[in-house]
Every structure is written in structure tokens, then in C-alpha cells.
Length: 173
Image 1: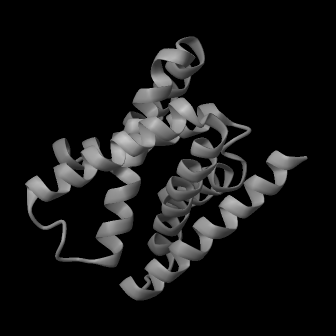
Image 2: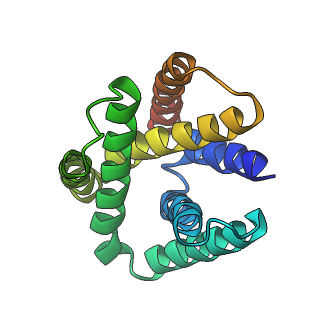
């Protein structure tokens, strides 16, 4: 069930993230909820993690809609940090084995993501939503059909490119 939710959520973000800007905040909340539930409640059933993930997703989207201007930078920071860690982690498995390196990469990616969303809102939203959406889609797909790391990375990069191109095309209309 989780894989199907990831496929639907990731696809919506991948292809319509700019039009549904609140979905980026919701997806970041969902991913954070799954991660935190797995980290702090590893022996609980999957439904517990889903409840936590949906609660954080709803909270993230609601906060972004209510406090849009103030939270744009925070959402950009989180999405950029996660995106850069995902991209570098997928390309070089040795780079992010040290905690300090993963934190440094997160901070750099976060700064870039915050800048993109704050200064170049539409373009930043397209890029970040395509990266996060593609990753969530591939995670859902990988949950149903195990993929080699190489195939996962190639498909991820292709999905990111397709998502960016589709969103840019929709943006120009």
C-alpha cells in the first residue's frame, strides 16, 4: 500500500509540482513522517508510520498555505538538502558514509534550495518538485519491483528531466 501511495504522491509532485506548490510541503512532511516513524518506532506496523506521515504531510501543507511567505525558504531548504543528498548518494555510495559529510551536503543543498524557492520561486519549485517527486516515484516503484542501484539512478535522472520539461511546458502556457 505504501508503494502505491508513493507512486501517486510522487507522480503528482513530479508533473504538477509548480501548480500545486503546497504539495511539495506535504510531500516533505510525508517523507519526514515515514523516516521518523521508521527511526523511532521500528517495530510498529506500517499503518502507524502512514498515520504519522499523513499527519506531517497535512501539517506541512496547511502551514505553507497559512504562512506561505515565511515558510517558502524553510521548504526550499529542506527540499534542497534532501534533493542534493539523494542525488549525490545515488551517484557515489562512498561520499555520504560519514555523518558530517551528509550534514554538510544537506546544508549546501538546503541553501541552494532556499535560494531557488525564495528568489526564483517558479523555477525553483519546478526543479525541487521534479527531484523530490521523481525520488518518491522511484521509491514506490522500487518497493513493488526491486531495482539495481544503477537502474534506479538512471531512471531517477530520466524522470527528473521529464518532470522538469513537462512542468516548464505547462509553465509557458
